[in-house]
Length: 281
Image (cartoon, rainbow, N blue to C red; front, side, top):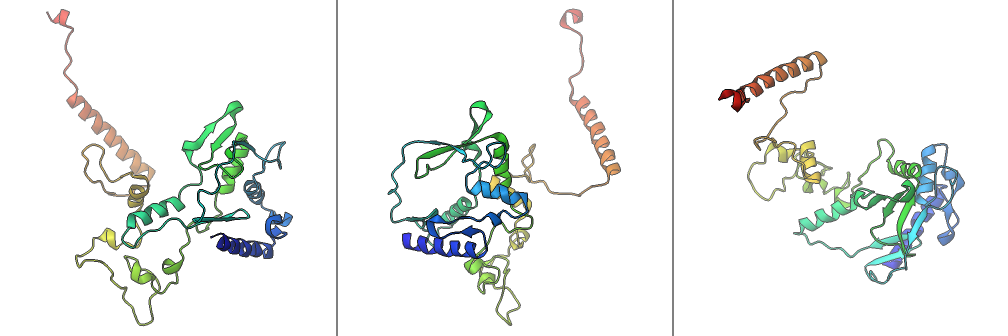
């Protein structure tokens, strides 16, 4: 694993050097001054990946870290290789029938960059972030000034129209076998094969939702965040979109109707007024 990690590190650094983003070689490589460019976002990204303060009077200084005694570096020996800041892990395996393991792995590699559970406000209003795993030098927490923390968040925002997920292997856009693996048959197919290959495990007709090329926004919310926006909060039934109304005049008329209708319903269920018990006697 270490040898493979070293090969990957060498090729990546060589590519970055050719692009003019790195200077030097190996462990002595550093970001080139020309890598910042004219975009202000480039400066924020450079400060982020080098753990430097991006704004304020301390700009360019190292960020504040909290450290403890370094832990045992040999706990992942044989499963992970670490070379020059690059790490390669190959300790997770999933059999062909273990789809739940593959889903868990995909959820892990596509997790958000920041965990709100490990984010807190320290003394003097500084933002403190607890690392999930301490670094080799024993660093357990990182602290920023609030403005510099916002700069670090800004550096995480992807550029417009950039792909956040890239597929490789049989799921790559031009893979010859992709059409045989995707439920909708989407992908490149061999010449002369006009119809997508049906790889369903049963002959029962599929619902329109199963035939969709992509999951709907409601399905994605339920899948990722366990939020079912199609469930009625009153009766538990399934709700559906009836219409999309964008005309302000029509919206005001409909809301006024529902407000008036709701007032009548409320008056219908309101208990009848009565006099106080003393006066009633």
